[in-house]
Length: 256
Picture 1 (cartoon, rainbow, N blue to C red):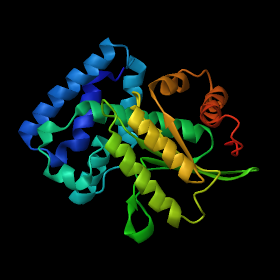
Picture 2 (cartoon, one colour):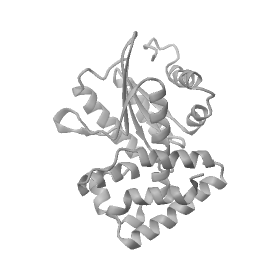
Picture 3 (cartoon, rainbow, N blue to C red):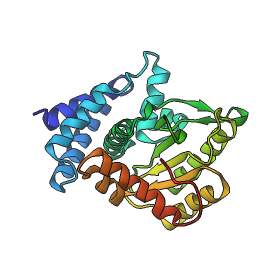
C-alpha cells in the first residue's frame, strides 16, 4: 500500500524546484489536510490514492529548464503562467492540484482504453500566434474516420466561468488553424468534478452552436458514472450517451 504519505511526498517532489522551504512546508501541510478530507468524505479510496501517486510518477517529467517546469505547474494549478509566476505560492489551492492530477489521470486512462493516442500538456498554436494547451489531446483513426478530442479541466470550486470563456476562445483559435481540421467529428470537452454555473453552461452551449466541433461538458456526476463503469465497453457507452443526451435528435453526427 502506497498510502497518503507517499502520495504527498510525490506531489511535493514535483513542485519542490519552484518553492522555497517555508512554501514547501505550507504546501505539504495543506496537501495532507486536503487528501485526508477527501478520504473522510469518501472521495478518494486507498486504491485511488495508489493510482494517483503512480500517475504523478508516470507523468511526463517536467523539463530541466525552470521556465518550462513552472509552465507545467501553472497548468496543474490552472493558473495562467504569467500570473503563476507572480503569485505567492502559499496562496495556491492544493485541492485544485489534487483534483486536476487525479482527473487528468482518469480521463487519459479512459481515452487510451478507447484506442486514442494521447498527449498530455502539449502546447499548440492557433491563428495569430494564439496558444492553446489542452490538458489532454487524443487522436484515433477507425473505419468511420479520424477523430480528435481536446480536453481541459476546471477543478476549482466553484468552477471558474472566466476560465471556461478563455478556453473556448483558445479552442476557436486552435480549430481555425489545425490541420487536419478540428471539425464535425471532433470533441472539445470541458471537465469539472463539480457542476458548471448557468453562466458557464451558456458559454459552452454558445461555443457549440457557433462551431462544427462538439463542445461537451462533463461534470461530477458524469465522472462518477464513468469511474464506476464495469469495463471499458460500458464506459464508452456512457460517454457516447453523454454526447447523445447533449444533442438529442439534432441531426449532428454521432461520435464513434
